[in-house]
Amino acid sequence: MGRIPCCEKDNVKRGQWTPEEDNKLSSYIAQHGTRNWRLIPKNAGLQRCGKSCRLRWTNYLRPDLKHGQFSDSEEQTIVKLHSVFGNRWSLIAAQLPGRTDNDVKNHWNTKLKKKLSGMGIDPVTHKPFSHLMAEIATTLAPPQAAHLAEAALGCFKDEVLHLLTKKPISFQGQHSTMAQGNNATDYINCKPEEKDDTVEKIKLGLSKAIQEEPEMMPSSKHWDSSAATSASYAMPYSVFPTVPGFQYSPAPFGSKGDASPWSQSVCTGSTCTAMDQQNQLHEKLENGDESEATKEIRNFSNIFNSDCVLWDLQADDLINPMV
DNA sequence: AAAAAATTCAACCGCGTGAAT
DNA sequence: CATTCACGCGGTTGAATTTTT
Image (cartoon, rainbow, N blue to C red; front, top):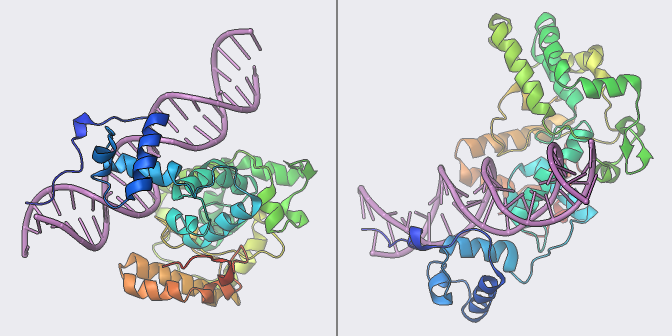
């Protein structure tokens, strides 16, 4: 038969670790290393599962870990990398010395996501909500677009109201909107508004509208870049600010459920080539073609050097190899 | 000052992959 | 070759803490 189980499931302690347990684990690992997690709790005199010990060590006890707040530059790195890699937390954490994937994931979910949403940026696609609205307008013919956009509009009327009334948002004491020219650093330092679930609300509103009138959905529609450009100006939702100096990346590869029109890029001009590279890579990963995808990742400087990435990420920014 | 709500983050869960048997 | 499990990963949970009312 196979291997023996790592521990007796009903004879292990769970929950918070005590300082005594921490000491036992730390001193055992200092002496013997982390070669076999299955044996570590037994040999260290801990009534814990090996998996629990590994987690405690890698996320908390490791001496090389940082425990303080994330710095501005760390936050910027996370956002940059997330715009490219999506929720590949271990990949992102590998670029941040002393930070674990758990740290990065928690910080993203509790802080950074809200900052982005508060600034009118979809934290999943890293595109402004105005682009999402433009996509509604250009994916569908005008009558359907108006219908669906109206449904979506109701979901984030607060943002629309804010922009129409030019009510200032307080970002750490400064009165600023993105239309006033934030750069990436200003952007990430801004205090977020609480709009974390805006995108989900939009999607919900749209799907409700679609369910109500399913015949309005086109069976197929080819992308029309000229329509995309003109419609984004024609639609009233273009009142959403865009960020001067920013260009927006397509959906991060590896993120789930991004084959929908929500994540298809508004692709015009010189940005297309690099966007296509990322999309092709994404497809390869989704098709299970890991070897091809791996080659592409190794050559990822192409994408970093392109002008399509939102966060001016350069290959030199990476301190660890991606593969 | 107390209660309620919101936030944080350590720990757990479940899955995919590859290795051991 | 099939089975079983360790490992690593991303997603989720819930207790503790902080902030707001």
